[in-house]
Length: 413
Length: 222
Image (cartoon, rainbow over all chains, first blue to last red; front, side, top):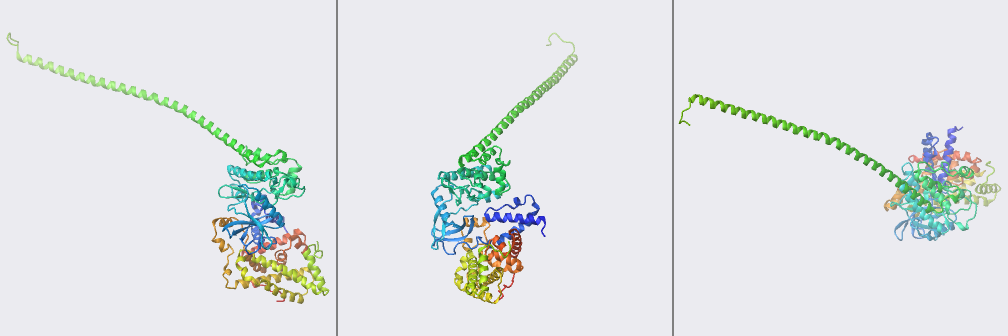
């Protein structure tokens, strides 16, 4: 007898399991958003499932032949992969450097076709193919450069609230858009643009990888819906013919994820997205976590109708960059205006204050001068009184001398 | 779907061979043994192809001899035990395969080869390697070493119940898909997923615990 919580737990675990096997792992918190109280138990079960995963059929345990691949590449361990093949860390024993080796899961011709396509695209933001071929056992392999950094998916997960800075997000969008334009100029569509296929190095470079399901746009056949559901364009979901604008849609989703910390929808189920987007005919609403001036650009990239999207990936990215520059310029202008107003206010205040302080100074000076004058006058009066006293004393002495000398004679002086 | 109405080709192949075995067709036993050989070789290869496999593969150059010995033992088991359904055979074959893998593993671990001191974290060649490799390895949730993973599995599964072992064996030893395994047991896919999920949970717990000294369960005929 299972409880409703048990049912939900099994359902969540099943969803996690399937997403894990598809190579698009789900975030635990997102999975339990409606029931965060289930996180600890689900986390415990997932931890146990991960211990068993390597033993399951089709798991990476086992992998390639243990001897040197093509007598040259010593395979170390699996470092990634998807529906088309697994990617292994390897040592190129000839050149003595580390490389990535891709081995097919299914049709090996597809892997070689992918290698030829990438090899024909010389672009700094496209993963470089170093070697390809069959080894002595007939194993098809493709050797590419090893990107030592992380994938964009890992970077987004560890970012601030799942986001990266706007400047960084736009820079990476521009780089990937440039790579996509090169793909589109070659008449192809990538069809699997998503964060896990974007590799980042330590110098801020973004590199587009995994061309396993890229197609020749001119030779495509209708039907089928290859690609990662969460990042598919509406036309890709419906299996309609697609072109470069399908990759523009996926790139806009990636940009949305970098800027907002998540996709514009939370339900990754194909059918739900078709119901919400296609049947309703409504364009997707972008997150308000994206700066307001960028939202219309992202929304245009995510337009349901390809005709309303940007014509190329680079046009989308440059539009995004322009909107951000305008937004930045507006902010600077606002700052300048505010600073100017503050400056003027300060000047006015200073002038008034200066005027106010100058008045009492003069008054104090006048008062001091008057006090000095009064003092001088007081000193002058004292001196005058002293002189008068001396003169009086002198007069009295003369009169006393005359009385003591008697009446005056004729010869006497 | 009922267990008597299998849909996967493996089940059909084994069922047909068992019916022919009951009719006295001597070639039927060879078909069953061929199937078991295929699974055993696949598991041995899986066990050897991890990074520790590089270290030990030279020690196991006589794997074919071991496989032959295993098939002889399974042949005797088929002669001595009643096999009435594919389910009986799958359980028997899985037990045999796991026992042979343990024998191989223990033989290797008791050897004095330097390779026996392998670590499951990282191969020594990589531990001494360049920074880019270290970064890549450190940054990703890399799958565990296959030798250690299967070795741990062989011990951990012995701590589970018979039902749990059976359901896990179908996926992990016989390599059936979920749907094939569900059909084999006569369960709906949803029910199989739940039981498999619970069994994985128990196995995962056992794999996370320090290795026990549980003795191997020998095939009943050995």
